Length: 325
Ligand code: AHR
Image (tube, rainbow, N blue to C red; front, side, top):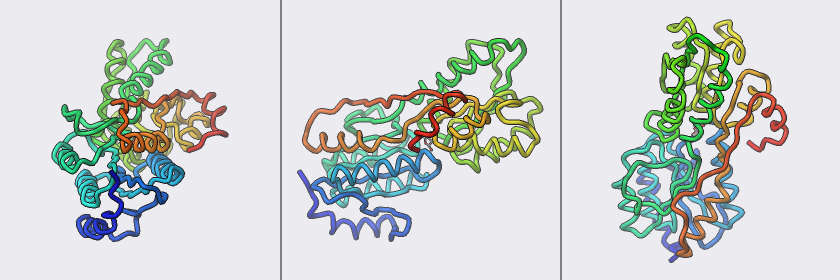
């Protein structure tokens, strides 16, 4: 059932509720003029990955003729909850969101369920045991990404006989990609006692966060062999800190990251990042397909996993000219 006629009435109330009057794109409609309205609550604009993901969702909505209501939560869960509530008030047809953190969604998602508005999780998961709160989850396998990073490191350091000191730049505390990339990596690396995780701290998935944390790591740890960054932006920040400390990233310190954005791939092609695990942000087309199916009452798979690859320096060099994001 479509509820477009009620959207205009709900919008004014929603803007009052969220305190967003425009300017940054919050609650801005940016889609086509179709019969389906999708409310999308984005995490923020913390990274190159996120920017590409937002563009993909907006472009795909336009192409699919879906009216998109878009909000940017600036990496705050309370903002996302407000946005979801405003979409419920606006009686959109479907709500999609990429949860800032894994926990604390049951109440607002029950409200969506009571209002009979289907929810699609995109990019990040929630930890609720109640699977009836959402129709499907579209996104990467973050545990696998962490495992791939560790498997590469084990091979790369095969010849090392002494301790290999690793520092980890974690993503946003409590976020699924931070939790899963941390556990996937740790589970594989623990098989080899020479790998020592000497420091691990959040850089919040941002370049400035990665730089700051890396500066502190370099001050308090005389021997750092490896940086494992949960995304490219933090790795790029860490590279700045390493260079400022007079060391050569990719040579004096091995750097592994996740995402494979254009900036990350450029650093890899330059030999400053040694290995990147891809995390694909181009989820827009699949999200619009799932939205249409959910509205049509079709059954959708409860999990849609994104296919991804990995890049060492040579592979990054070869792939860079064609890189979309
Ligand atoms: O949820 C996906 C992660 O969020 C990306 O790896 C990171 O760059 C982003 O901020």
